[in-house]
Image (cartoon, rainbow, N blue to C red; front, side):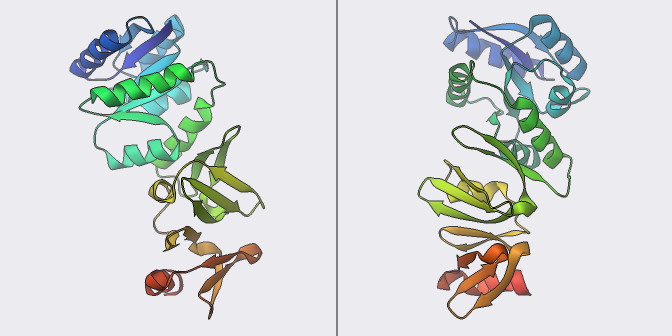
Length: 246
């Protein structure tokens, strides 16, 4: 049976989550402790060594990111619980982490916990994911994003991305390191995590990092570093050229 700890500074949220967990996961998951902050949460983790944290972003004495950053116990998974804080949600997405929104939606909670149960025996990279999320949350300028492939987790700097190309539900990242990274996410979801001031949707199937664009030719193509050619759709031409060259 999987052991879980609920860490949230609002008692009614902890109670609500506990009730739902007990109702739907009685034989699969046991909540072994609750806490309301970083210090109390760390104490509970070291005492019970859980498999899963249901963790709020904003705690009484810090953030959920702070808690994981300070935690020396590594063998756990995390589902974040957060309100409609766009900065927090973007940070979670940048780190490719799972989350549910307050007020707690029953179906979202069930889906997130089922995913955690399925992944409970897999190797965890939670420290790396949290580190990247925390950087974004704290406003680090040269930020990274997490890209997960079937067998690798990449923490890649945005500045190293030249462009992204969509192929249905898959997106390929082309980087300065001559590495192509393919993830199973459509371009729309990729666009949500990239910095809007640097990345431009120049085509239905392409997003380009304007920092790497060298020129635009008469064939409707952007020429980028390392000789990459990125098409610009006629519908997005004026918008793209203005964003890059003005």
